[in-house]
Amino acid sequence: MMHDPSEPLDLDATPPGLGQQDRDYADAMGSVRHAIAQFHGCTDAEKSALVHELAQLEAIGKKLEQGRVEIVVFGEIDTGKSALINALVGQAVTEVDVRGGWTKEVWSVSWSGCGYCVPGFDHSQVVLLDTPGINEVDGASRAAMAEDAASRADLILFVTDSDLNQTEYAALVQLAAGHKPIILVLNKVDNYTPREREQLREALHDSRLRGIIGPDDVVETTADPHPREVIIESADGSERHEFRKGPPKVEALKARILEVLERDGKALVALNAAMYAADKSDRIAAMRVRMRDEQATAIIWSYAAMKSIGVALTPLPAADVLAGSAVDVTMVVTLAHMYGIALTWNNARQLIESILKAAGWVMLGEMATHLAASLFKGLTFGAGTVLTALPQGAAAGYGSYIVGQAAKFYFEHGASWGGEAPKAVVNRILQATDKQSVLERLKAEINAKLHLNPHAKSSR
Image (cartoon, rainbow, N blue to C red):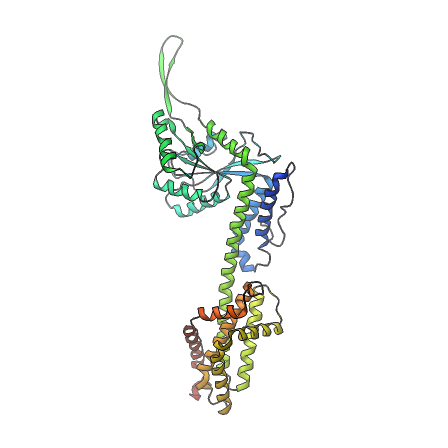
């Protein structure tokens, strides 16, 4: 069942047996809790769009509570990833197929055979996750799954069976940029002579991996040994030949994994959770800003067009000004509501006044056009409405557009100017606005309305 965003996930329960070193662990829990708290106050549309992120954060929170260590096995197809998991677990759990590319999704298996418990947890769990091969066909979606698994990983096993090709090297460099501990597993070493193995290790460490992976983290394995011919002598002295497969050789890898977990296990879990939560928090914030920006921009254009048309078609000189002001106040209140900020009509008027004051002389031309057109309407007893419609309506709508953009900035920063002066913000908005394109768009809206207005036609 999906967690209700209005109910905070309980990450305060401290597992027994934790000591002073768990200060970082508590900080990591706080990071996850903070990321989840971002969902409070989201609109229904935002919650729907972010439901996947919430599920992932809840999963990482549960992982943190349990002290669950995730080891992701990464590499190209046919390098023996699945066989390596079988060898580590001690049983054939992956149904290794002779065909490459069979691993269609990320899946996990508990590594319980080693009987290992992460220091600092009474009941921890070490889990191995297999991922699709990095060079599989239709690799875009599978690469995304593998990338997500790696982002959650506490430890990465990068499996290869030869010197790294360009695809492997690029993937390894990308993984190393995530600052996760990586063990390079040189698998299928029974394909090489001792001399070839030494040359391969030297090539990997000295030329390819220097500065990326240390020599202690390059480990040789034979997860699925080749069958070897053996001669069996019977009691009667006769001999027969059979091909038998020896046991996997993964002891060195097990030892290195346990060494890393013994030394850094709990710290890895805490650090990874904090990094994961920070990344998700940034993504959630960016998505919310983008969604609200699109919605706010649509609201601003809608009200600017409404004001343009209303002012343009209102024949009474005083009524057009009053109607335009009412539209601006309604727009600002609507924007505030969208950003989850309570704003009264009186406060909205004060905000509009501060924005217009900050705009200063820049907006004076638009206001002069607006007032001159309104005066002309009065002198012609409304007959001049057709002549004033486009310039007055566009000027009024442009002013509304600028007010809306400034109010949007104000609400985006939590009903503040973000540490800047209102004048600096409004001037920056004015400089970034293509005035001509805004006016042309508003004039098009007015023209479209005029062509649908039979009274306007008869007056022309």
